[in-house]
Length: 142
Image (cartoon, rainbow, N blue to C red; front, side, top):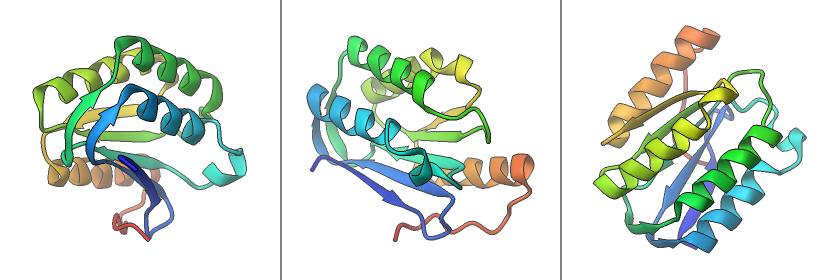
């Protein structure tokens, strides 16, 4: 599957990884399922890192970005505020991520986009410490 979602070892987050060619339909299906899952599955989740650096191409329409933003607005909790970090090393993917973050800015999430995974992880760790007092995170996946 071109998109994997795995929980982190610390249990506080998920890592979303895109591989190869990510199509509009795949993106829509994965994120719709992820955002509308049972709230008990989200309990204790504070952050996510979406890493698109292994994706050769992401062919996602602006319409799909808006569709997912609307689902996120309706189905994600306001508390605790989520920390959403995106890794986009390609300009096209960076632009899509920016659009998605802009459309979701009214949700109350803490969003940022980076060119490298290292920068994204450092920002998540700093933001988790500042918002939740957590400074011992294990961002590796299970």
